[in-house]
Structure formats: C-alpha cells, structure tokens
Image (cartoon, rainbow, N blue to C red; front, side, top):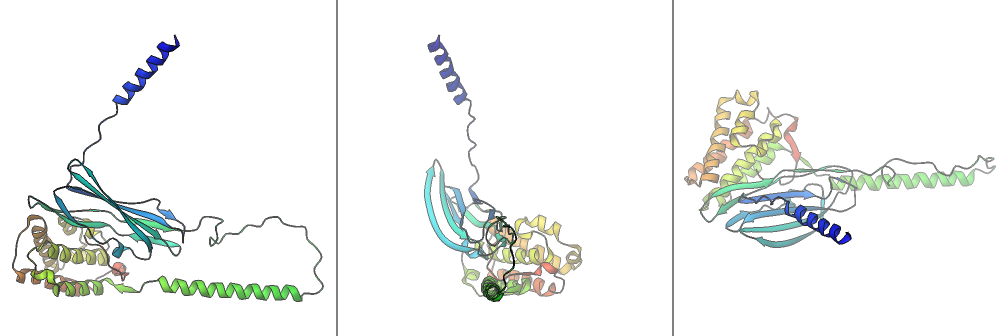
Length: 321
C-alpha cells in the first residue's frame, strides 16, 4: 500500500513539473534594464545599481557612460559580468557600488543609446530613471530621534555646581564642532546650480564645434541635437520631453510656447528631421546639420524669459533622450 502511494506522489510531481509554461523569448533588438537592490537607502551605507544590456548577436549598441549622469551619489566601485550567451542573444551586466553621502532624494537618470544591426536597421533602446531616497531609520544615529531609558529616581542636587557647569560647557563645545563639521561637509557635496538655458546653449555650441558635424555617420549628431533640445524643453516647461516620442512632444508643448508659431515650427523641424536621420539613416548636407543647431539656439534664447521654475538644474552631465 505504501509503495503504491509513493508511486502516485512521484507521478504527481512529474506531471506538475511538465505544466510550467515556456518562457517568453525576447524579440527586441536591444533590451536595457536598470535596477537597484533597494530604493530606500541609509546615508553612508553602500548599495548596488545593476545595468543589464540584452541584445541580439548581430546588433551593435552604443551604451552611454552611466557614471557620468549620476549626480550626488558616490561611485565606490564598478565591475563587469559577462558576456553571457544564449541562442541569438548576448547579455552584458555592469554593477555599480554606490553610496548616498547625505540624507535626501537622488535621481539616477534614464539610460538610452543607439543600436544598429547588420541589415542597417537603426533605433534607440533604454530604461527609465530611478529615484533613490536616503534617510536614517527611526532610532539610528542621525535620525534626530532619541529615547530615554533606565530612568533613575531623583536625587538631591549637588552642592558644588562646578563639575556640572564644566560638563555642560564641554558638551556645548562638542555640539558646536559637530555642527560646523557637518555644515562644511554638506557645503562640499552640493553642486552649483546652473540655469537650464545656459546648459543648453553651452552644449549646442560644443556640438557645433565637435567632429561629429563632419562625420560620415550622422546618427550620433542627430541624436545629440535632439537630446539637448528635449532636455531644455523638459527643464524649462515641466513636461517629460526626453521620454516622449516626437509626436508626443509636439502635442504636450504648453500653450504659451505653441502661440509662438515660429518657435513651434523650429522645434518641429529639428525633432522630425533628426528622427529621419536617426531612424531612417537619411543623409543631409553639413549645412542642414548646422541649421538644426542654429534653430535650437534661437529657441533657447527666445524662451529664456518664458521658462518656469523648472529651468534650474544641477550642473552635471545628463544622459540623452
């Protein structure tokens, strides 16, 4: 009887194992994944950011420098894992060991780059941004919370107050020194704030003087001028332009910008024309490329006074759109 029961249980396990559905195969040319082991961290304690790039073996992917876009967080270490191979796919993994020096909110920007396959197909792939909250848990050092424990019964006050006064003065001196040290450290890590229009104009002028202007492959130039314009629109007018398609950007522009028909037409022309170069591989004269940058400069200079409170951003390099 027991042997029959064991045989039935074994068949049950075998049949249940056969019911597992097959895993869905990845069809996209490139899939980029960014994740952290936890979104709420403790200041001063390290945590890991993992970037995975899963691509077809016939695809070349221009992965951006992730570390250049991380603002405020300290990069302690970085290591590479892989590549790992599967039928028709290649997986590369980069792991960053990060640390938040102070309590606060930190943004790890989105990752996006260009890909190109053997059949001359082109496109972009990337992942969204990650928000990190650094705070001390209740009861930890630095949390600002204290507890009174092991209270003793009251006793008669000391007749000689000299020792108590000296102890109090030493404690006040230590508190003052600690406050000054923390204030100095906080001032060191705070990055200067530069207006969005100044960042955009500097980036456009650098692009105009770069070697990309005369390169045979015009895709990176088109990608960069579109990214600079999108970042400026997002910072100045408060809508996520660098995570939108061109059609979505044109629909989401605020009315005060749409009313300036010449500016709206310039934005439309730069974004749509650069898309044709990025995705369709169109070749245009160098004069046209210069014209895109000059139109973008006019848009930035003409809308500086229209910018809202979103127009100030940290003076760091951000990843493109």
